Length: 243
Image 1 (cartoon, one colour):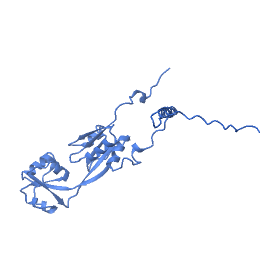
Image 2 (tube, one colour):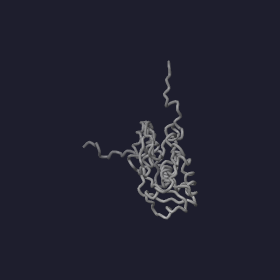
Image 3 (cartoon, helix red, strand yellow):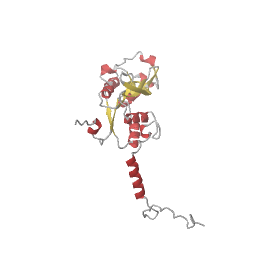
Image 4 (cartoon, helix red, strand yellow):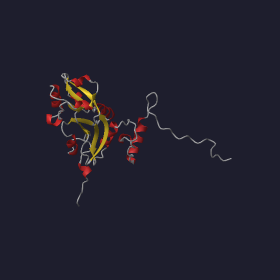
């Protein structure tokens, strides 16, 4: 006789669950992480910041969900835009543009605009701008992340905003991923759309019997004594008596 073992019988069912969340610089997922840990303390959540391509960690399975800065290649992923980022100009404190509260885009025409990629990234670009060599345009979150005492940033009117979104793999249908997406989208712990609030699996006959037995055996009166099951009432003395 050939015995075929199911895959689920070979995989331990007591493996601890975990969720891996990646994010690009400038994103602060703290509030969503705090809500997750409050609602699901038994599911470990790991955070990973990716300086380069967060989608690479998503596609190779290193992360379950990632916060990304659009635009990105959406092939094979679901993506939900979350919020827009204000563009700012980062410059030396001696630059005349620092006198503005909001810099008009046309006033940047006379400035040397630094290319973030050619500078080697946002941090280095801010350092170069602080030296007075030029001005770099960044999302406000990145300008704050790499803030320096010798540099300032000012919002720029008329420039397009950037957008932060959350992405996950199309083939990933796990409840933990859906639960985290719901938290990010603002669903409450009692929302019927959250997997944790869906109808629990029905109990088997043996489980129901064990529950009834436990309930009967554990019932106690106000004084702490064990309650005894009620005996059926005796029939009345006149019931069934012939006349």
